[in-house]
Length: 256
Length: 194
Image (cartoon, rainbow over all chains, first blue to last red; front, side):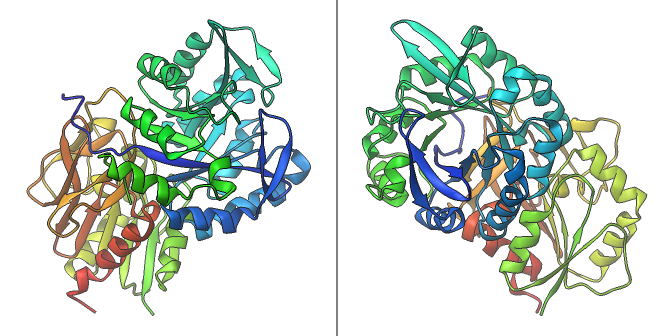
C-alpha cells in the first residue's frame, strides 16, 4: 500500500444551518441571521461546484419533523451531490426517517454522546458511510474540551478518547468543529484537525473559522481531507467556484 | 420516452437514484419482483452489503431475469455493490457467490482511512479526468473489462463494460452533471442502440 497513492480530492463542504425551513447563520453559536431558502441555496451551491452539503438543525424539534422530512426529500429530488442532515436526531427511528427521506448521511452529535450505541446501530443498518459524528470542540490555552447541545454543555470526557471511540463504533467520518474558531474568520484550526485526523482511521472534516480562499489552501496543503464553511459563502463574499479556482491555481487537485 | 427499471434489492433508499433517472427525462419504475413489462434499461442500485443484495437477487428471481435481459442486449447498469455482484465473490461476505458473469472478486481497499469517501478523478479513455463520487470499502481490483480506474492506496477498477452491461464503482447519481451523463450513456448502450 502506498499512502500517497490516492486520487481522492480534497472536498469543500458547504454547511447550511436550517431553522424553521430557512437557512440561518450564527456567530459563535449565538445570534441567528436569515440567509435564504434551503433548496434554492443548495442548488446554487451545487452549480458553484460544492462537493457536498450539510444541513444542520434541520430537524431540531419533533413538531417540525414532518416539514423537515419533506424539505429533505425536496433537496434530494433537486440535488445531485451528496448531502448530510443533522441536529435533533434523538433515536434510531429519527435517523432512519431522514435517511429514508433521501439524506445520504446523518450527522450525530449530542445523541452520539448520550447514546453512543446509536452509532453502531446506524452503521449496522445503513453502513458506516451514512454516519458522520459531529464533535464541537473548544481549545482554551492547552486544554481541549468538547460540547453537546449546540455548544452549550461541556462533556466531562477526554476528546481524543471520544474521537477514537466513535470511529471504533462505526462512524464513517468525523466533523470536527472548532468552536473557538467559529465566526472568527481567522482560518481553520489546522493543527487540531491534523492531530485528530492522525488518531482515527476515518476522514476528518475541518470546520470553523474560514473567511477566505487562503484558509482552504492552508488546510488542504496541510493534508485536510475536507473543509466545511458557511458564512463566507452565504454572505456572497466568496463563491465556491472562486475558492476552487484559487486552489487550482495553487496546484491543488480539485474538482471543478 | 425510455422506461427504466430500478431493481429494489431492499438494501437502502432509492430516492437519489429515482430522482436522477427522472432528471434525465426517463420514466422510472421500482420493482421488488420481476415483471413481464418491457424496459429500455435496468439499474441495480449501489446500496447495502454484497451478501444481502445477492440474497435478494436470488430470492426474487432477478438472476434469471438479468441473464435474459443480457441476451436481449438490454442496457444494464450496476452501481457499486450492484456492479460487484456480477463478479464471482466478495471479501465483504465470503462464502456467498456472486452472479459470476465476469471473472474476479471484490476486495477490501488497502488504505488507512476507510470507507473511501469523496470525489476522485477517473483514468479512462472515455471519461478522461472526470471527477465522480465514491463511497466504498471494497472494489474489483483486477478485471480485463475495465474501462476506467482510480487509486485509493492502490489502483482499482472504477468502471467495467461488456456487451450491454456497464458497471460503475462510483455513484453516478451523486456525481452531479458528469454522473448524469454517465447514467444516460450506460442506459442507451453508449448511443450504439436507440
